[in-house]
Image (cartoon, rainbow, N blue to C red; front, top):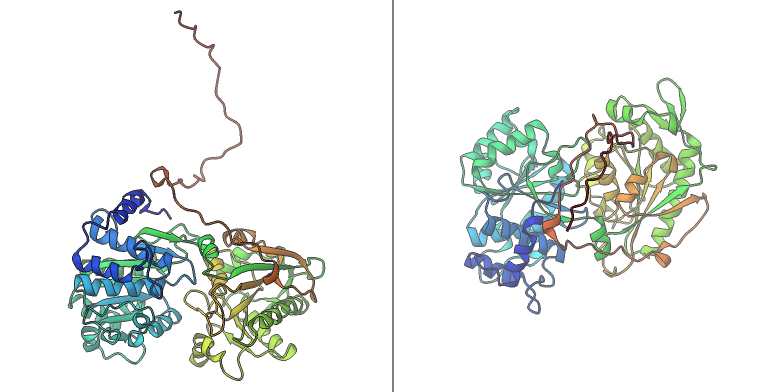
Length: 529
């Protein structure tokens, strides 16, 4: 997805250097409040991180200086890596719109319950405003003034809560016209005051009814801000909003914002990856499985189950990595092994193998899990602080976007990813740094990923700039924190005016590597004198 803000970068830099002319007085004062007293180009310590500050300022510039007619008619998109703190940016924009533009209503959309519950934790009681010191004393606003109602949580009170709440949080499905509650919720919004709209995990929005609902709301939206870590989908579709900021894996690694991913690939001769169809008993090697068909059929129709020996061998390697992570944690927190299975039957077998064969306390989460187990997954970070924490969790592509448990320190892949989006989302579950008591911000942290080489995930490790160890044996041990490579250099856009959008390859054009130029004419006679 192309960064639409690139052509404005030079003007934006000059605008900041010249003191931000053209800002509304309260906007200028609020930006000054968030700025460092020692450097007006940097954020004040304890508020926003540098990349959050950059994304916030671009949103302010796009809205007040450029305007919707120039940029963001259908919204502004912030592409920020998993673990990059998108919620803090949303909160800063909310505070700014309330203080400088008197916006009283803010709607937060998300695609699933896991994302919704995470956002509810952040905004309940105004927690994120308090934790990040986003409200200046010279305003009469306090964190508790941002009253939250969460649709579908049992805490809302129908139309009354939609009118009285400052922050309305819900799944996008709760505003669909295809169901009665969605019709009612949307009607309440559209009959109330204008509002700011925040569309989290925005890569989901190209779905037809999702997109139609956003368009219906457009006439009442003061400003729409989309956030995602994966705007580029495998199907080529993208959100209709204009991307104004990118903060990817390379930048986050350079700044020490996320863990360093390290891939451990089992020795191919020792671990021979095979699967059996639970329905037919058919036996196949990993390279003989049509993984595109697996994705196409879906999780219920797929019955490929990892065979006993390769499953136990890979789990043994992963548990070695978990032991190493626990030694690094030094009892300050409990690291977790996250196992990604092929299907429900494969996940159930993985959970049984960990619990009974390896004696590792394991949580299983599939689409058939009851609400109690799903709640355990959502609250896993809190559960890790108890006297009997889980050491592993097994899922079937259920725990992806929005499931943010920093304690995930090891990921075991039992399946191949056909989707670039799913692959990035799953690995992203292990990238969030642990920020516990006694853990220094500069302390090296890794996410160890056990990935069989025949799953052919090199494209994924290229995206994450991951270090890779090959030929790993079952009993082999490492201490990656001692010899991790330095973070990659951060890339800065120097000449924004030279940026072009490379067009996609036309599949109808075949390039045979030869060009027919036809007969070559003799050169013209040189001109005299």
